[in-house]
Each structure stands twice: as structure tokens, then as C-alpha cells.
Length: 155
Image (cartoon, rainbow, N blue to C red; front, side, top):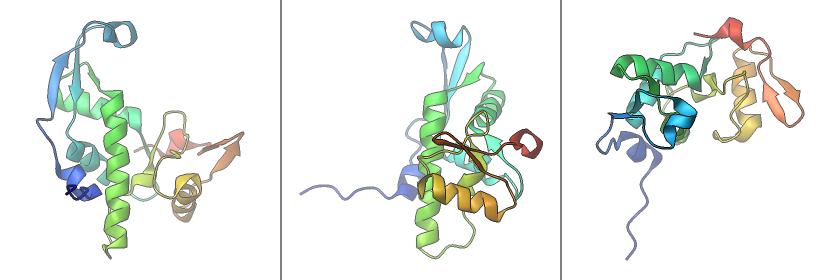
């Protein structure tokens, strides 16, 4: 018999043995240089995303910077930080579907450069609706959707 699938909220709460700070070595040094990288716990990424007030935005790179600072690491891992933001977004949507009113405002977390994350629940259109409802302007550039004045709105 197959194990039941974990809910998004269970995935968010499962920190395994994270966070951990490890040396940057091997092939990683080409891209990230030298020093240390923090691999955050999913709940840490969610906690930062929760702090962003209505009308403000944060980029995934800012989240990585906060994590690195918190753990005294050179950088925050871009791969796991992005994955955990995605898990936080789906956990928030799951909580909304269960009737919760206050959830992590994942739509306020954007890619560097002001681009909306198409992998969040509802896709680009869902994220766009949330942001426009909070007074942000969203424009389409080719296939991408952007908040043009995002720098002025950063938390």
C-alpha cells in the first residue's frame, strides 16, 4: 500500500536536518566563489515571506541575503530557497482552501528584476490578481509579467 502524500503544510514543517551551513567547494566555486552557503529550513523561508506587509515586495535574492546574514554564511542557497518559497506558496494556498484567513502572502515574493513567479499557485494570472488587488502595477513584457517600479516597493 502506498504511503499517503504529505500535504504542503507538512512539507513546510519538515525541516529534516536543516538549516545547515556548509563550505562552498568543488564546482560550486565557479558560480558562487568561496566561503559558506546556508541551506535554510523551509519554515525559515516561510517566516521571512510572512513579514512582508501589504503594498510591499521582497525578491528571492533578498530572502537569501537575510538567511545568509542570520546564519553568518557568505550566501543563501538559491536552489533550496526557491524550492522552499514554492512550498510556502502552496502551503498558503492549501491553508486558504481549508478556510484560513491569514496565510503567507507568497505573491509578494518576486524574482530578482521584478518578475512574477509563474510557478506559484494560480500561475502568473493568480499572482497578478493578488498584486493588483494590493495596488501594484503589473505589466507584460513578452511572456513575462513584471512589477515595473518594484524597487520602490521593496521591504
